[in-house]
Image (tube, rainbow over all chains, first blue to last red):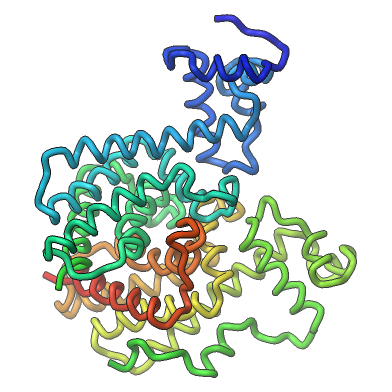
Length: 217
Length: 217
């Protein structure tokens, strides 16, 4: 791997961005940064801490990512792109509107269980105006559109009562974020393991109940 | 139903506001700080910005509050104490378990509509480990216990199916936080006014539907 201590030129940055994702150091930086952004948030996260966790020096990060914003952007974009792909895989071949809604909610829940750092990063994104304050849906729009499409199709077919997709997002879907990202905030007495099969089955059953109720006439 | 869709009374509106302590400057500091903590979060908030907004110098804040942590603590404690009082007023005299659950959800929703800064501060509290990382429920425990008590009473009476109060918290109750605190994060095309009577009535109706479904056998 070629490393350098100088800042890359803009052209080099573009070329680096086009490098195959197989670069081990680049992947290690992204993984460490995702954990740190999830743990402490964008404002508090420091490239120095990412470097320490990866076991490299700060200038080596700058070889791959010109700054914190670019590093964060790639992570947020990847979270929503991966989540969208995960959802589309689960929805493929499912035609019944209710089954599509349940499959979508299951997909989001399972995705967040597999990538809990994503749950906390999205929670922070919701709580905060920045770093996407000027365009809060630059990356998350695909998730909003996935839900809107499923709800609209169910209403069009006459299977779903009129309902706001965004209200469903803010209750049932956001519930998956809370369930995965938030157990420690309930205090030691109430804390649980979101990935525990029994706990997860109970939460999933509740989500299905709520989804059926939300679109029922 | 007594608790549905009515506007809060004037007395309730007064209760949501901080209890006067007789000192105009102290109150102005708390109000300005609550807005700033809601807008930018604990880590980013600066006492200097609070001072500028109040129109005083930073040392004058330190006369009232030794530091940012103490100022924040008083605000967070007041939010949860006021919310608990608001809830208890609404629950007084309501005996049917389902009516108590709906009254509790209505109370939280109405409280947050009247004090939207509280919604954002609680959202931040959920997304973040700090500043209450060592004791995340130091102030919020009253809200968790309010919900647990209502759910436990409904299950004990046999009116509610077995359900986790925390799962209801993370979907339906957290939904009120999202509904009030989060419209701007959905992008300009989807943004709405949470206090708009029609929007609020639709969201409240969804919350009631979800609550009935959550505890149904």
